[in-house]
Image: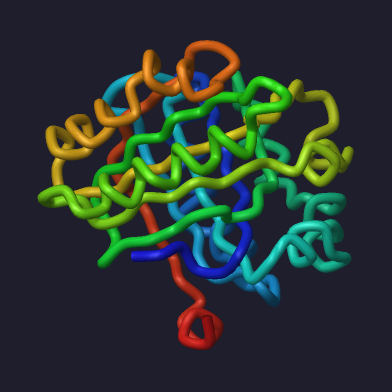
Length: 228
């Protein structure tokens, strides 16, 4: 299905072996529910890698970018719980982007997701965006595919310094494609319709970073989601 709202926070991270169990418990029992409780947040999902890296991918869907730069969300980012400080101290290779949703379509949620991260050469971004949307529209009609999305990060919003990020290096992804489906094989097949050779010809700056993920946890703010 289409993503809920007009903006997302997309996060990739590895985790130390020692911190993995605590990370999952923290995410399930405190962190995602804390985020989804913020007005304007609609849903939080966590995926684990079947192939590729980083190991975890988390996606928060929100009403619009103002929610993701607003006072209530920033208050949480600047006042992390003790459990949050403990869990995030085990993060490695973190990427986080505050993004606007450029294109999103689908029939439902998939248990598997392929993420493709890349950047565009200056001067050809409009062309690359149009080409990517055209491909995603065709991909969404492929068998067993339930959603196809393009999000582009806001560098300023993504780079806001907060207490939660203090002491950690966090990279910012630029263009993000997510393809959802019912099996790893079908999502993989759909991803081949966005081959690097074709993306490079359309204006991608350098080779993409790809990961195939399986859904582990999802939480929806039902009253807000029904209004989207």
